[in-house]
Length: 246
Ligand SMILES: Nc1ncnc2c1ncn2[C@@H]1O[C@H](COP(=O)(O)OP(=O)(O)OP(=O)(O)O)[C@@H](O)[C@H]1O
Ligand SMILES: [Mg+2]
Image 1 (tube, rainbow, N blue to C red):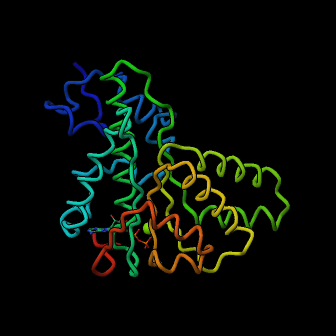
Image 2 (cartoon, protein in one colour; image 1 turned 90 degrees about the vertical axis):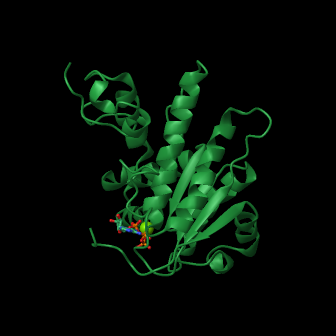
Image 3 (tube, protein in one colour; image 1 turned 180 degrees about the vertical axis):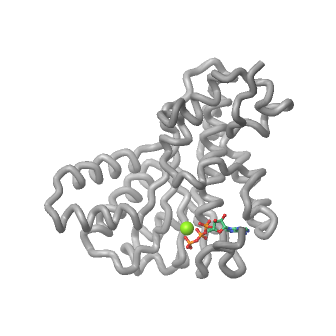
């Protein structure tokens, strides 16, 4: 049998991916085919973060306290199949220093969510959601927004509108770098709209930030900051930047 390149489900298969056929439908469902489709790719995390899981995360050893909490958090994802207790909390991953593993860890949680919802649906004989999660890079969106405004690029602005729509309703959102201190009032109002929609609908969001959760009231208004705080568990990352260590 031809050996298929290992996929994000490798750790869950007792014999690993080496026993899977080259056209493994689960690999295609999660990672796509010939670079197209797949729930992990559709979620839109930067390519270098796409294969991350709880077990293989490079931040796991040095952030062991964080990862103990994360493991418990990930276990709550099963609740989406529970009719009575299906609420999943939001997370606020914070450190003042850059490069401590916040984005890495947010993507770990997102990928585990995609896997849990996919496998959980199959187990119950129901159709897995096509786009259960989305990664929103707030800085990237800001750059795109400024550029599109500067150049009157209607297509760019329409793309941003679509992004806001999807981010407002997706089951799980990663909001990467929420502490947009220097942003214009008009851009902040867009991010405000997304978070407002999500907190109102009780949808879970995983934020990463270099701003403390208490300082959010200086980025947004006090009311929204309060709502975020109300639904969120804060996880602090310690230590200096690990960027470029590997
Ligand atoms: N604890 C760690 N151990 C080893 N490598 C790590 C650790 N944390 C992060 N890295 C590596 O450092 C790089 C940056 O990590 P990441 O993007 O998660 O940082 P961040 O906290 O989101 O930073 P920023 O505040 O700048 O957004 C990545 O390549 C990641 O693999
Ligand atoms: Mg980051």
